[in-house]
Image 1 (cartoon, rainbow, N blue to C red):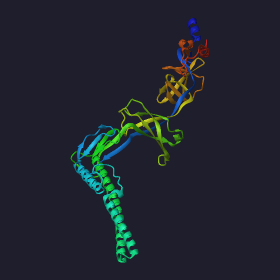
Image 2: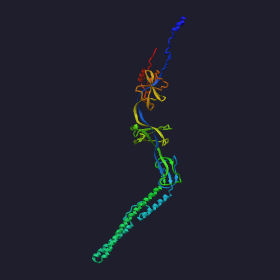
Image 3: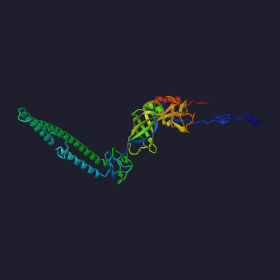
Image 4: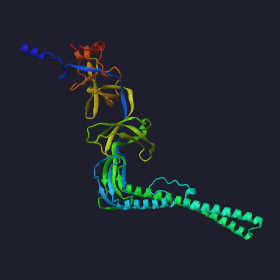
Length: 424
């Protein structure tokens, strides 16, 4: 009984690891690989939205009325510049050309020119009408001079001289009239020449050609249909390159300039496309406070006008910023965090990230240069003891910028991160 009482008065000592009757969790040490945070040049971009549009769009219409004889294209047909698209019946316009050419030949004949040549140059003094009038003037002049001499001698009466002078005036005026008639015929000849050119142009306009390389977006007529003047036939769009229209917020407008690179993505397409800003609006839209810019995007055939796109405008190609490898980032429920190594333990830290490029991510706030972050933390917990992976300590530890940290840096990190003993 005395022994039992002695045992009851002196209970056994509580085991280590327990406090106030509750067991504390002892986390095992874990070997980790680390990277040192340092400044790294990264792009600065402006994220915007926009849409693709055809670089050129035209509704092809007929310039002359007539019945549509042939239509060589349909919806989606690709055409080259100058390729025949449609043909209007040309019989009536061919007859107009022949009629105009006949009138031209008639006008040339009245000037004494060959009927089929193209040279319309003529000397009025060399025409038969003017030569005849000139000969009449010369004859009247001589007759007047003879009668003047005879009148002075008293051989011829004064009345005959007066008749001769009147005849000379009439002949002289007829000569002037002949010259004016020839000039009028020259004007008629030029008019007939223009009429021939108009008739030939109308004949050529019966054939409708593509003004640029493109694709038929809409067909608006059918063969056999009579088309009035300027009646639409097809709508043609140029799809390579495409016109990218973007809406840039007013706050980012000062940073956007011509020549900057634009990267874009299209819904449902895994390909990435790029172009360069080529046109900028002269003003900001007052209603939306947006700044419109345009870029030309090469099209390999998979992009279509009217498509909604998300784009990034590269405003700065190389800007120093703090960045860590993307392997160090953990995201849970929309919260981004990383683990730092301090005093041999993992310290959890929430961060705010920014740009991403080449396996690195920008840290907007929360870190400073020289901090050591854990790569691929996985299930690592806050406060868990850690040791540096020997492979990293031997000079193979990755660092921001793509270079391995040196052995001296690894040794210093090992001495700083070595866990300290705690408790008996």
